[in-house]
Length: 135
Image 1 (spheres, rainbow, N blue to C red):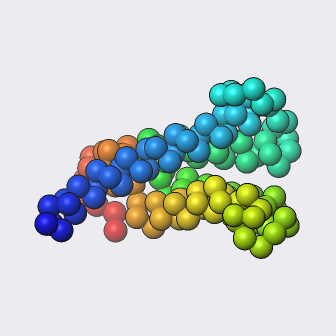
Image 2 (cartoon, rainbow, N blue to C red; image 1 turned 30 degrees about the vertical axis):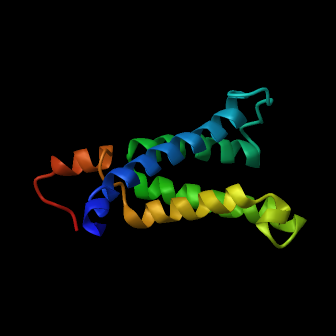
């Protein structure tokens, strides 16, 4: 039974990568464009603007599976910084300081960085065309 379920793991991982990337990109879109939602856009020159750019571009790259490891690493680091700068000063536990989402994104992107792009990614499509596999 375990083998039956585990054969779907590449597909489940691909869905995780795509959904997490798109949700993260929406955070960036909300910061930079004020949409979706009613929040006003932030200035590009500030720290929130830089975070918005990383969230939008990094999230889309992760969702597409393009430059996946680099994008996931940057997204993970951005969420670590966000947690320690914005949430940790308000209490030690994420449930208290409302930093659960930052911690969750940080570790999911860290997992994506370690795992690599997987199937249904532009990285894997581009790698197939490479005559000499890179190791």
